[in-house]
Image (cartoon, rainbow, N blue to C red; front, side, top):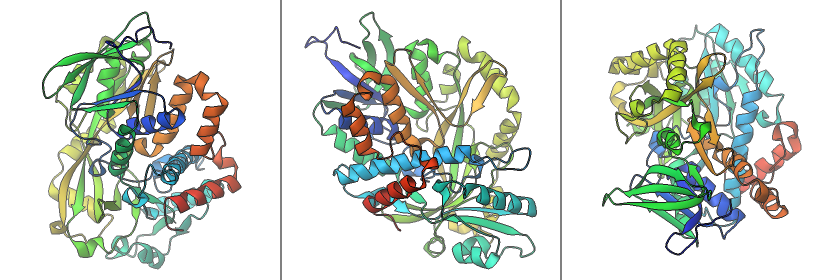
Length: 501
């Protein structure tokens, strides 16, 4: 990607990042850590950093490590438990913790308590079949070094000692079970994003612009990307240039990806899902709960709708949330337009959209049911996890907007994906991140993969390889196969991030 257009009148950035969320901030910090001489420009449509999905109130704040999320450990037809995805998610979050720990060590993140806290991660189920599933899940996970220390109990007294709100007032005739992982975390991704963004904006060669919307893309024979960028306040547009572009605009990524014209973008669609929380207003109730407790999602519901009763630390204050309650909106962003979904439909993705819709009628029915929920319905769902809940103690809050990926499939025509999907041009000159959960928790793993794919020659040099290992000590080494390495990197991260033992 050698530039041919570097006159003073037409400067060319090495990198442009679009969006001011956790993904763009992680990539910018990583690239400047690898090569301080890289020039980076950033553009965000809103007037604030981390104002959409990365904001603390717009996501669960769970350090997604598969400790408590039951959808990562499906039961096979023969009754055994598949832990392969759980191992992958857990390892990806360990990479994030290692990277953040290194940034603390280097002074980039001076106050880890401002963005990460220790909080036990728990799974809780009731009913004989679910208890048996959780028992098998616990036994299966203990075969992996990433889940050592996980506790299991079907003793109501023990579970009540862990989470009294969950057990008080519960029918003693119904069997219950829980698992508990003491080394779970709560992460304020908004605070983390803002700290990283403030750091990188102060570095030489970085030009970050809020209130600027990217409207179009064009690429000429010289290999340089031209982006049309509009100043939202003045309505003036200009052309900016870059050798490499990353589109990390959350729900806004798909429409931008379609404008690039790269063949790899053909066939992708998006299905927006909104969310809401019940937020506790009673300090006496908040004080009684110290855990993130996840249950089994309703049949046909998306992973982001998995019910959980969560202790949070947001801006120095302890909070308690329950949800999320799902909903449907044609917006792709919380501060987007109701025309987003319709404007994303093209000839290339109509077929996948129709096929995915036909194959996910259960999800459609679920979302309609969620939209039509009454306050009494929401309270009933809360009382499944907190039997003595008083509706007067809880307030409904709007959470973030997620766009689930729909992509072409040779056999099915189109499939709905609930993970994340990185789309890159064949020459590595542009990349875009689509999708939602586990999202922010795996930002470091995703960006490490992106850098190696889009900057392959430089990523393979001894200098960059050494820097990868300096920032992420387990880089290139699978943790699931190495108990000693897992223990060592976890202890390093725990110490530097000032987490509980």
